[in-house]
Image 1 (cartoon, helix red, strand yellow):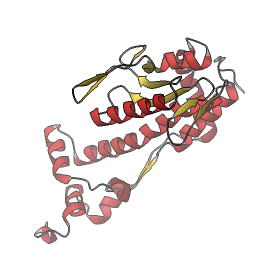
Image 2 (tube, one colour):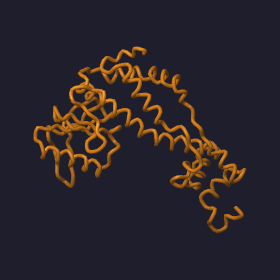
Image 3 (tube, one colour):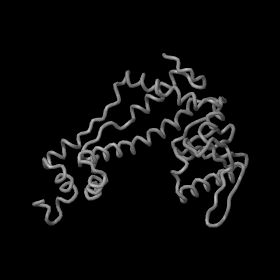
Image 4 (spheres, one colour):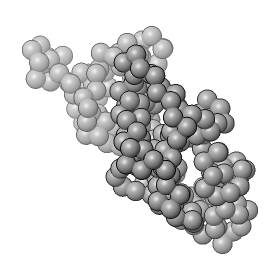
Length: 245
């Protein structure tokens, strides 16, 4: 096993953990998946004309967008589940809080970006943490953000319905500070980021992953040889006037 020089996690564990993320990555999209939430051909028409793209280019962009949206969840798996390899009582949960340390009474909710929570989800998360504090006043609750505005470990101050909330035991923590807290190395997250391209290269060599199988175009051609017409028939084939579109 190659040495990735991380120190806080074994080479085998980081390889296998990253590999599991790679294997979950969405690499196949067909017409059924493409139209799962009903594609809007009128919007695609606007996009094509305004941006000076062909319908094929716009469809390709939409396919990539859909694949990217699905894969965002798998990156969440990568960020959260790496902590199951941590010692000293850390564990990753399938329900409730994302990560907990019952020995240290630390309860963690993890988000990928600082701006992914709207007001209602922020309120729900904060109230969940207040509930934990009411059950055990020795608890510490953390909102850990992978992409925060800055490196931080600070009190999470919120305002809901005109009322301000602030408690030293409820904190917003950037992922680098959380790695330091868990692994005892302030540079642990930076080390992982630096090693990640090499780890991924080794995994892709082993698994032969890395290509997208896109059958959307060939399946659209089965509807009509005209991509424009195929898109509209896909959405509106039962509408009046589209039998001779």
